Image (cartoon, rainbow, N blue to C red; front, side, top):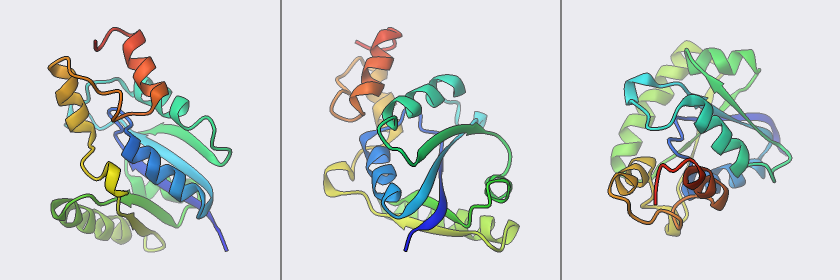
Length: 162
């Protein structure tokens, strides 16, 4: 039995192959997956909210049950707005678990009907993070194997790498 909607929140700065793997796996569990791209000015994103939204839309265009939105404010409120009962998060390393556990409890305290599902990345994507991709970009390194092809072309077309 599938569940109606799951929200996969993040800054996605940029969206990586690891993110796309979690989106794909989530789309097999939920009737609808909402990729919620946070404004997150505290993280000082490299790409604008509009660019991150466009990259996510390009990367997920082949998934019929996945949609992408930009949001600000509390994630627990976004979940209420969309009648979502589940958040989707990825866990790569132990430090992710500590942070995600704290955020899961916080969101649950703000919205008691909200639960969080955690995905471990597949082995081939376990080391990929947006911050690693941004770091490689800063030094004009090759990122094409770390991000979806559509995201790579988007970045390249905007002369932000290579």
